[in-house]
Image (cartoon, rainbow, N blue to C red; front, side, top):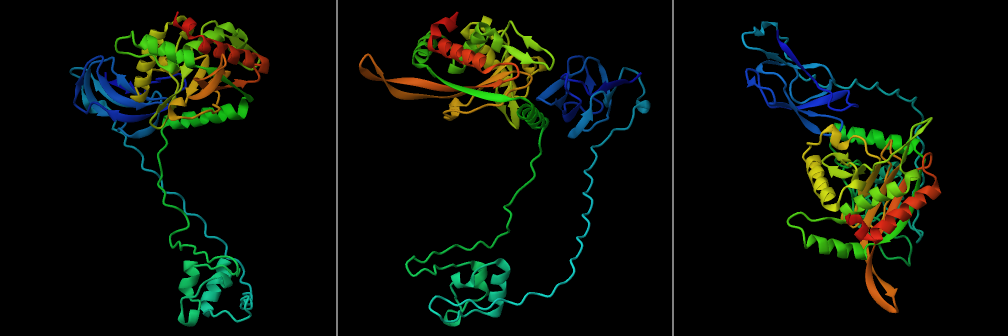
Amino acid sequence: MPIEIKMPALSPTMETGNLAKWHVKEGDTIEPGDVIAEIETDKATMEVETADEGVISKIVIAEGTEGVPVGDVIAILLEEGEDASAAPAAKKPEPEKPAAPEPEPVKPIAKEAPKPAAAPVPASGGRIKASPLARRIAAEKGIDIATLQGSGPGGRIVKADVEGRKTISVSPTAPDIQVPAFGGALDPPRQEVRINNVRKIVAERLTLSKTTIPHYYLTLEANITELLAVRKQINGQFDGAKVSVNDFIIKAVAMALIKVPDAHVQWAGDKMYSFGRADISVAVAIPGGLITPIIRGANEKDMKVISAEMKMLAGKARDGKLMPQDYQGGTFSISNLGMFGIKEFSAVINPPQSGILAIGAGMERPVLKDGNLENQNFMAMTGAFDHRAVDGAIGAQLMKAIQEFLETPAVLLY
């Protein structure tokens, strides 16, 4: 009996997916574990492996088809000796329906055209020389014809002068000002950009966050001079992989959440959840959107493990290879724009979490220490919190704990 290959549910929230690419064609023989297609989900583009063996009889859903419901048949697989005649015909992507023509606007009842205003008189008292056509165009565009410079015979203002908008000052004390003409269309050139599933989901979640979660923000600076020195020292001992400042931040946030458990919670309507393990979501920019892979149990991992795991997850994210278990869940988020030179910013909470830490760039400035000036590095960080679950004083305690961990980096190494 023919085997129906169906659109898989690659995440708990997935209802539809885009069939981005087929890796097989009709007539191909496949075995369990073969990659047969790429499906674009609400988070990433993922490869689909088959669990069966046989011959691809029909490609039911063509590649490039968007919005295929979970559970719909996308291909037919025949086992050895089976007849292909019972397989359904392939579906093709439905062409976009042309937009319905807009109804013609109701023509207004004609009114008597207003009489043209009297020709303006320049400050000198003489009559402005302008052609009737130039006067009419100027009146339609709301242009004061007295501000135009004529290029016709005897300085007469003509049509080209009105359309070119070469204005002059009418003040005897101000210098002449030339305004360049713009002869193009009123709207700039534009093109339609297809929105992928990742962008759609990010837009929906951020809109939900900003419209339903009462955000408040707390900003604090951390002196990371010692952290940078420790990082330089341990990286000199590592072979290959290097620990980043972001790795220190992940560990510091995780340890601070365990130290301040009242901030390590999520709002759930008629109840709240409290967590005993810090699963840190880290924002990673990918083509067409943003995704937050998770370092699970970051409070229990040493710096080298966090560094290696973060590099692996970031690479999978950019390649569209993250699996649902790589990004689903998380108890708190970090968004770092310091590498772009951003000094300070506020991030949007990633629901259902109750907090996110926005990290700015480290900035060097002179500090008076023991009577001497020396340069030290400071990093601004802004926490956004859900006021339903985390009161202001609790949020402040968490920010202070993060600051203390970052300013004593040796404790983060164990």
